Image (cartoon, rainbow, N blue to C red; front, side, top):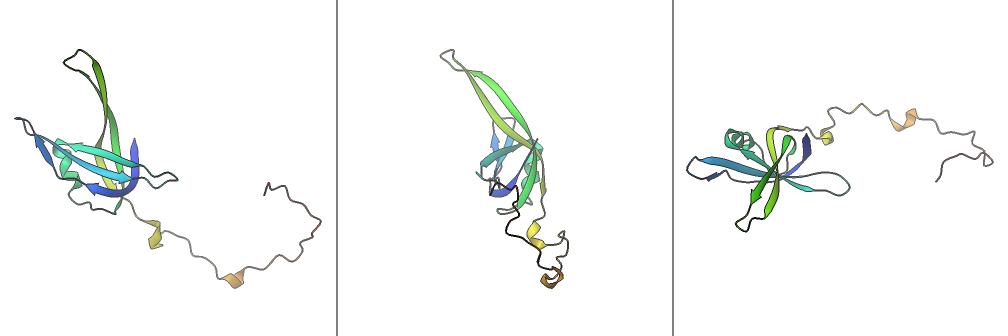
Length: 125
């Protein structure tokens, strides 16, 4: 699976326990009608993948969904989900215009002159 968006935050690498488990978080804001702030964690040697990325960059992150079960001291079973990244790549912004086809000048278009008011189209608006 993949998540695409603009980097909102890149966290510092955190180390836990005697074994030196490493984790680093990144938050990506999706660019859709209702933007979502998605936190993705990179663990162990994958934490270094975030070193060359900065806030504001557009990226695509390859992810795995992880889930785990935990039984608390009262005997209740709880479930937790996490989003774990394993690859990240920068996306080129379309604003640069490098990949856009050239637009012909306005005088290359001729106005339609044979329109009749009586003609009805089937468009709903």
